Image (cartoon, rainbow, N blue to C red):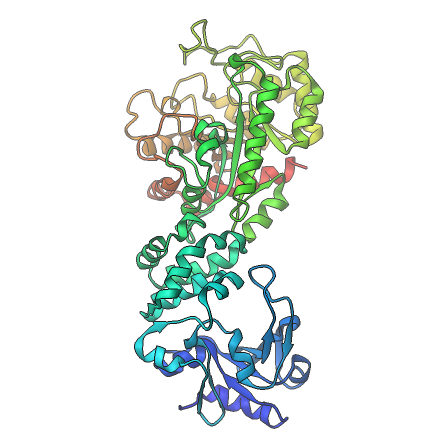
Length: 552
């Protein structure tokens, strides 16, 4: 085997000091296949403390005997030959011991085609007939695939990646083991799974997704991850209180506008999940707590891909791990049942935003849109300029300021809106409201309200409900939503615009059927001349700014 120059030069540095250096893994495999080399993977019988004195070590994983060095301007991974004990956490061995010969190192490697060593003479050292599998185009596990996958389920994705990129078949017993143990991927670090998936998608998007779905991987981790999309934060949805959540969950639920797979496809950074309680059904405090219990249950069931958060730092931590953040909110201040202590109770349970009213008057104040005696008919034109916050409502506003909870004025009467402006000292939001100048309904905001929100450095979450977007042509949902965004921008700039879809609480919008279609709104904004920096503000940056300032 003809050796590569960088190995020959580095091997001399090691042999001059009495150490061996071998080419291994993907590097030796790709050399044999005649493929271009993008990574360099070498092993040695020298320990890190023995070779860091004569090479430029960049990063060290000392407990694993692994380091990345810089040599002639190229990064090279060097690992000390080692043996591994049993695995304890589906990823790491309980202990390792360093060895001196490749034959002792080889059993820890995953596939036969990755366990071929090349020495300084260019001779191939092949303990598991890896050369035969390269010739026949076969992915074969070293040892029992059922045992090896349970040691480290990431080997599932690695096998599929090699099959895709190399065009190799997967050996039958390995196929069976992958299908049987795919559920174990839920136990891994999600970022590591996405790293493998991204390599596949970068190679061939459609073929990668087809292969992953064929093996049922998307039943356990979302694979349609919007790697190149602008991140999304949605300030309001009613998903968690939908009946189907209790039965089918929020991972993959065709009855919902929002589930984890749909959010992953659109590259959601954060979803605000509202606890919505209809006061006409009684027991508001008790029922709100039952919904929070369900929220917590869904978070636990899907903890490998979504995590509850309370403030900015936790959102960014989740995003760094490629997990979706979930912020708990309340839609209906009547759940307090007129007791200020209940506000503190919900704060302790993780609630960080509350809509003061829904469509009924409560102890806090009055809505603009109130149901009549029939409990079903509503008049979208009625505006309440007379009834605002009650004395208790003013106490709630001040307490929310003190606790670090976001005040949400969507649904609130016009009089109540201005009462909040008077009594709140921190930015407020209208989490799911639009511009009344574009669609003249009482649930939307006047231009003066929009300016008042700007003065307070607050936010308006654009609502996707067809009745609040347009009273005329509801077939052009995206076009009409853009009209609201353009109007608000024209009088207050993009710094106060956010998203508040109201998904799972509204009729399905035509053209934006669910969370997976959010890219269509992004494209529509680009087509209307919005700059990327403006779309980023609307999609996520504005809410991050407010969250960082308000929530404690």
